[in-house]
Length: 94
Image 1 (cartoon, rainbow, N blue to C red):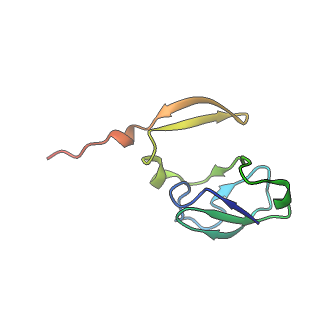
Image 2: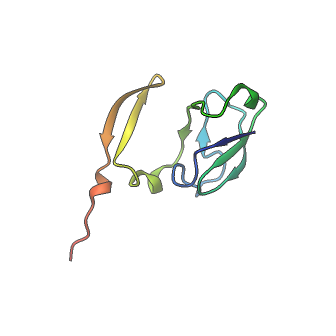
């Protein structure tokens, strides 16, 4: 079992599982998803240590995007750019 720092603020909980794809762990099964964490079950869990990075591709991020000033663009498993999140700067007017 792996407990990941991927709670509701990272991956929207409004879709059924799977909510995220882990290319390195295609058989990952949801155990629990809470505000702070996502727990998955996999026979590959012993290959990971606390602090290891696990690449995941979330399916739905709309509710969480505006929580961050920028998004990181990843190509071929490398961060190659950063995009400003314009929704972060919205302003309500009268």
